[in-house]
Length: 396
Image (cartoon, rainbow, N blue to C red; front, side, top):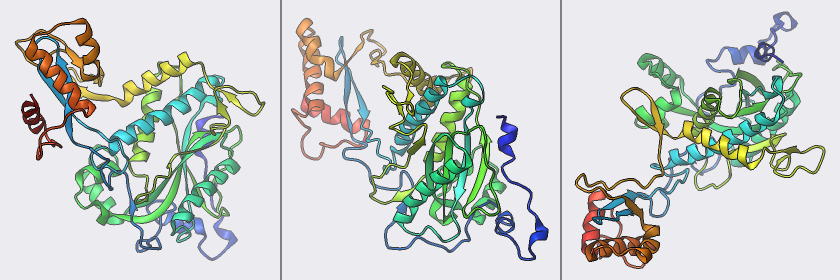
């Protein structure tokens, strides 16, 4: 099955069949197929939020000792990251980790497939009839209905990601005027203060997964709009960086503006068909199940995807290196020692005898991190590295 076959997902409309405008003609008259009119809102008093529009997790943003130099006792501090999808500071961590997990699942299944159309991955979306999804129950039921539509259209295995909002016409016009080099939702989240003014209630559901050999196009007679968007980069194996980047980028972008009711813990990603949790398994014993790749393949794929997702440090030559988990060298330029993770201090002290002042700093850092001691009142929850260093000195 070629991508050209998939791209022809909308059949020409027969305008002679009726003098009344069809549903598809109405959709085509809007700037985005399936987009709802402005002014419709969800029912009830509950607040709907995007990732990062809620509360921080416990202890998030507080600084603590992370490592101590074995030679001079210089201490490195780090800010706590809660990783909660609701956290204004950490939602990106959640989106990154969720994007890696989703990409790993898809790429692992691709690895098991014949090197032909079976490895093709694509992106589509489903939009409910205007006004038909206004409550939380309808929102999640809509995700299940979108999955049924995807199966009817021929998708073999896929995930469905719900979105409660679309940009308003004013937002799209402003976006076109500013013409940034990134997507509209990145622009809304990063560049626009008071983003809520520029989004409207218009639920829809994104599908990413594996098309089948015979795909049904969207039809004018469909109750809900079905729209094919694109085929993703082909997959050429574990070390195919371009494929990992394209897939992870799609997941990361879609997760940035998924949505849920405030306080909800319901998972936004759900898997269906060949990618369902009961179908794509580590130990396939039934004919309808699919065996996951070996642990070695899974580990290698995960490392490759994490390297793509973790790029954060741009070098002078334009290359981007992944974040490192190494403890590293002493931050004091006059010291050539190495840092010891605070959790390794006890083991280090059993086999080494550093100077008393270095031992004191190691023990203090360890005990603070383990909760055995805490800074004095007013300094217990440092919100900056400077505050953490001051609290540490008080504990020595």
